[in-house]
Image 1: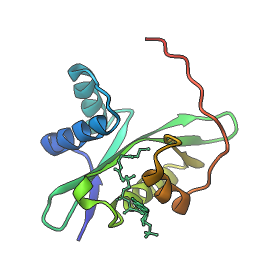
Image 2: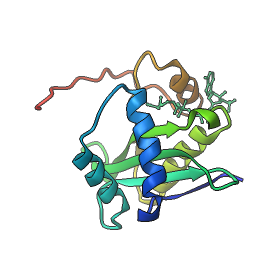
Image 3: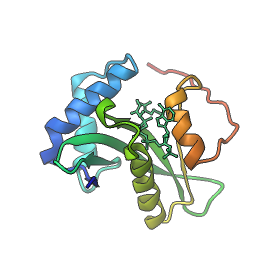
Image 4: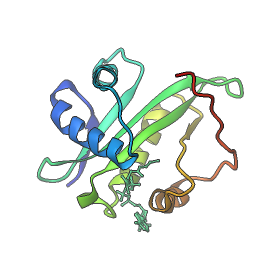
Length: 148
Ligand SMILES: CC(C)(COP(=O)(O)OP(=O)(O)OC[C@H]1O[C@@H](n2cnc3c(N)ncnc32)[C@H](O)[C@@H]1OP(=O)(O)O)[C@@H](O)C(=O)NCCC(=O)NCCS
């Protein structure tokens, strides 16, 4: 049976493999010190990023998700932003992605958040096949200014 648990320091090697595969999927690189900082922030109980890891019945790490909350002017509470979601290719199509989103939604609801949201590439048809089943499209277009 699959389990989803909060990431802890002991998950470092498994997380690192999935994180590296996720970055490869995006043909991106993140500096080693940023990766180290991100993992530390996730696993610090007082940290500002939360993360969870999914394991299959044999204990094999099959997916990760990261999220955090931020204030919102249109709410008396806060919104939750799901930043990263990745499922190992060998485990896809079996509901792990859906469960990881559900895990974030449960955590966000428990913390009093009034919304969970995320972005994806318009061209990411696989992810959108899942997202169209579990969430509503906002209709907003994403802009950004890169400050280096
Ligand atoms: C997107 C991703 C997280 C989905 O994970 P997953 O574990 O395969 O998703 P699930 O098995 O929970 O899929 C849930 C639903 O989406 C559908 N779905 C998943 N992959 C699909 C595909 N390739 N084609 C069509 N439908 C698909 C499933 O049929 C399922 O629907 P159902 O439960 O009603 O049958 C995974 O493909 C992934 O890690 N992709 C690479 C990284 C990425 O794109 N991350 C998201 C960035 S925003």
